[in-house]
Image 1: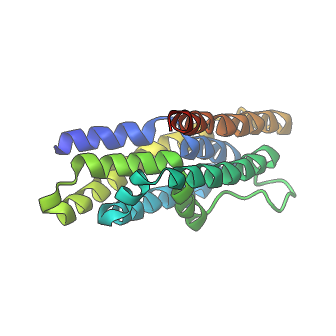
Image 2: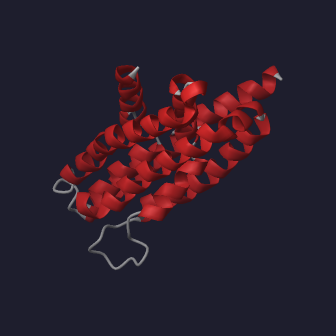
Length: 202
């Protein structure tokens, strides 16, 4: 069970998604050190979600189609705003006052409107939390998710920071950030296709 849980958390956190696209852009724009609060905010937000979902919210979310629709709308609005911020970001050495990385609290709060985070957390709790050992299993899931997730998502920020030398010219950094913003918007497509598919089936 532990090996399966570790594998699940590794695959869920290291694969592309809104969090990792933002970390890649933040690493390239602001460097790894300034992106660390963002990294820990993501992992902390997901850990808190594990405890909340484990205590019953996951069942409510799973049984209410409107919940997922509301979640998708909120996520879309927030991600579009973040994509615009990323696209306009010119780096830490410019005069733009909005050029700063997403902080710890913002990253933690974002997980509550991140469909991938919900899918990961609900999937982990539903798969690995046993009803007769719910508390200990939730603690285990949260611990593994945090321990495995930190290095997995840090790879994306590190990859972005390694691109800083290439992206020193403002025009290249701007092109990179517009590309990352576009990919962030595209990450909304699978969720909306799922919502539209469920709507048609119902």
